[in-house]
Image (cartoon, rainbow, N blue to C red; front, side):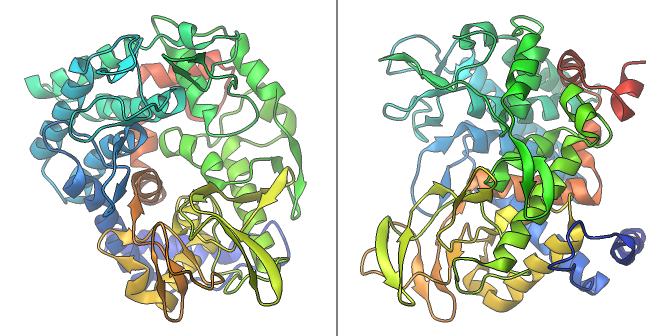
Length: 474
């Protein structure tokens, strides 16, 4: 009853919240019991993507399923975040979750590192973007990824703070997590100081691009500044923030980034409510509010639907990096259309990349920012498309009602009454759904990582002040 009472208060409170834009208006709040039951189902099904599919010996999580794939180290980070959520929700025991976490940490600690191009999992504490599910070694010629290592480390640090008991196994979790975090050589990755390179390959060296402009690297720079062994220069944060683009899109003034994942990933682990760096102090908001505005702006664009895509509207929306039907140009409804397979779809004042493909994770992972528009959208997608979109592990990755169909599709299939529907679930899209539902409901990941000294240190070195961070520093 306590949980139901809480959701009633949340939902009734929506009527008192002014929507940032007059059109489209917020939908009426859904029935509280139905909404809570739906979140229960979605959260549990999404959790089991990680629990069921991770390799029990190594902890490696497949990039996608059911299509056979390599492991994504970012998906492993989301898996490590999932296991304590499963404990708190009663899906698995604390002992079973702890064993899964220890197996994962042991694998990454023992996996060979070195400058050679084959036979290793990483170099200088970083790991390759994809690892072979069977061998745990670099998959083909992929890059050593600084951002995907960041997402892995975020899950590692969450487990470090969550497993805080006196049992030897919990002490081992904390010690192994500390070792993994300390051995990452951030200064080496800052190939063009003070910014951090996006990656490195043994065959060609550092990638030409550095992390700049607003995106998911918000978390990367917090952890790079937090390192007790090889932190980047403090000027990295101001240099990174200097490359932001601020402006107004669909009536919302905010830092621009088109795909919603860039406004969500860092917030999976860090509670940005009430804490501000110098940039946000100058704008009078925090990064949480920035993500809320980006969410509203995208929904307003989809509701406006300037390209005339089918099924777009205020309760069916969500553009982010996701699967798509095909890389092809076709004429649909008398208009030439370009479609893509996997692509970073999104809209902002910096540009539009939209082919009619909707990803449920785009809306779902914004639940804490704007529950009054997100939950009705999720409920409507499940009601309208049913088991064709919502199945074993929750929402399939993406769908496109405008795609007319082809004889050969890379992923997914055509479904009557919905159009193209992905057949796969993607780990890096499942993870934010699960974690952000839990953050919305209980704040578990946020309040756990507020206690982590590395997260606190990184935020302080980046110049964040206020709220819970000032209290943590006392």
